[in-house]
Length: 119
Image (tube, rainbow, N blue to C red):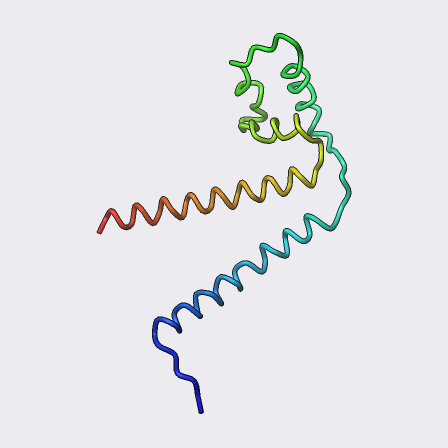
């Protein structure tokens, strides 16, 4: 005897399957980040060493923190603060992945609010 589902349950099941299918590549990338490579520092970190030495020196003018965190036209404020706490490439990569996920959630929420206010 076949099982019949209501339209709401079918929609919920389809949404759940779509979310699981969409999260598989993200889980794969997270697995690659956490399990491969080595905790090596790159040559790009020389700029951050200079900025961090200024920031960690006594008498640092904290009003310059945002200016000292710019690198090649990009604001590197959070990665700079992360490097103050811990020089680990894995932590930086996972932090970046979480920051992008948060940005995606915020963009989605903003888009939903804009589309609901247009109605």
